[in-house]
Image (tube, rainbow, N blue to C red):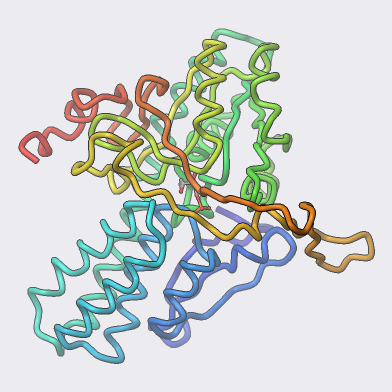
Length: 366
Ligand code: MRU
């Protein structure tokens, strides 16, 4: 996708030296577009932990490149296993992190230490390129859903509600929830996106609004609490969100607040779809509420908010009385019964084990 006419991916290898890893610093968006250069394991792990990069598919891709950077320093078996473990512990909820690192290790355990660095860059590039292709395919399948809605309301725009940021910034390119939006927009379907601000870190207001705006997609940022009201008044035709982990039975972990949107959508007969690349399906887990680890982040994210002050400077202000306690669970789980369906790179399916297995029959014995 483009920023001011320049095409970007959210992670890439430095064209000058051919080995450092470049990322957009997402803690600085939308205020400035800063490109960071990661050169070692510590910097890669910090980028994921501090959310300079975030979004389930993207942290998987950056972890893969992070392991390649780590191997440049020490390509022994012991170091490789230790460094992969360190990267795996940077964030707990998105399964893409473990998926990418398991895939890297499976490949790299088969090659000798002196071939490992080249093999690691090769595998990380495959992971990144496949993510782009999968997300584009999610876009193609999801755009059909938007086109169907458009066909039933000629002359009126399709209103899509999304939560958090599951656009190209959260993946290597295209996005998951937003890929169908970009594809439908390309097809000239008249559409508009309601963007949940997504407190406490405001990924909706900061990142989704930024990327939709840079692409020219009509959108409106709303307070997190506005979605139910808009649905009651017929202002939402479809909800599309991303996900950090989908269980084999179709439960969906995503940014905190997603579950409330699914409840409101169910009460108002608004279809609730989830953009889900296969790298986000955890075939080992069935009960999302009980089995998916939920990241607990610092209460300071709830107690403070950062924005641009009227004098143009960035300011972080406290919005909670000092002395009040804060809690900050970063994800929640939407039970499969509230999910209309999953949009994967292989097509759409019901959020059930049978639905998933119909698209991924090779997982039947898993
Ligand atoms: O904490 P974040 O910003 O990494 O959370 C991101 C989300 O919850 C996204 O919706 C999810 O990763 C889907 S990414 C395409």
